[in-house]
Length: 427
Ligand code: EPU
Image 1 (cartoon, rainbow, N blue to C red):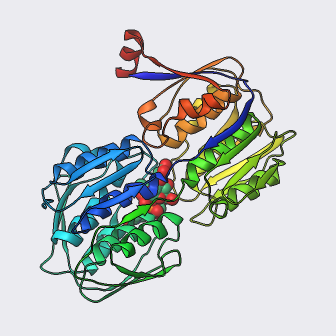
Image 2 (cartoon, protein in one colour; image 1 turned 90 degrees about the vertical axis):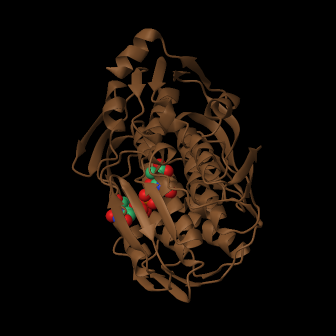
């Protein structure tokens, strides 16, 4: 097991490249199950969630290669193998295997998903959708059993705007008989990306990216080649770290439209941001002003950038309120940042941050993926050395982070944990 070590205060300069979107990737890979012939996806991030999904596709009989960001999945020999335990429990996105396997085989057994602990993360809307399409869904000893004689299109109104439920229902409905309408659908760019792949495979999906998605079921889907969209959350993380510790950083391979809410907030704080076609430039930020943020569904401020943004706010003059309306307990980074001299506290669904304060290096632990990003940014800003453990979370969503940040001039490296540190983690 490793930890990250960061010598803070090094000025970051240059260009940093964004990879394919994790939250698209984790749905695109399961979507390949629905095809009858090989599917190629280009630009996938080299993160542990993708390796885990590759293993799961292989467990059900798929033949999969993954090299230089390109995955080729041959689904021809796949079967409806039950997956009640093992890798499915390790990632949130394993729930997409439910929609994809139900859509293809009319049955699936999938263990309840894992992922980051951010407060309650029910999947009732996914299940409501599967049932509306004609599936019988039961929960038996921590695994979801889905069975249908046939799937029939239906009108489904989501009570909660959910990315996962919207995509999962699309996966289950593309081969159902007749028309499915998803109302109050989520509008995130990742949903458009998954719909684009499915349409290239022969599906008939209209309206992805709006709150009403219409799907005409088809009998067969075929293989195709698809290029994934860039990761707006990785891009946003880099923009925030550029504002926190940069002296002129170009974030390359972005769709600036996907980052409008963050760009607006950074500018409100006094951070110079210039927008190009597929890159953004974040200039040296001085005399930052505190701003409040409230996370919302797309195109609002993304919950996945709330934690990194909180770190940046320690550098701003005044007091800021950060409210997470999506996840009630996404504040586990706050205690860790306090160890680094931040002045912040949590009240209900909000964190209150007072600044400016100089952060100090400390030993901290990433409790989840974006908390990890928040702590890495804090380490880059801080005086002295910061050690971050819990790297398994960071590795789920950021590929080659050490290499990318080193190229910008950061002093950051991975180191094996000592016996003593391992003991401490276990206890
Ligand atoms: N919700 C329900 N019932 C459901 C589904 C969701 O009540 O059936 C609630 C959730 O508890 C939450 C809200 O609805 O309060 C939104 O959840 P959503 O379903 O949109 O989230 P998700 O699909 O589980 C994805 C990303 C998350 C990201 C959210 C919001 C993946 C694998 N995960 O989760 O990403 O925060 O959308 O944008 O795509 C991350 O990347 O760090 C991450 C956690």
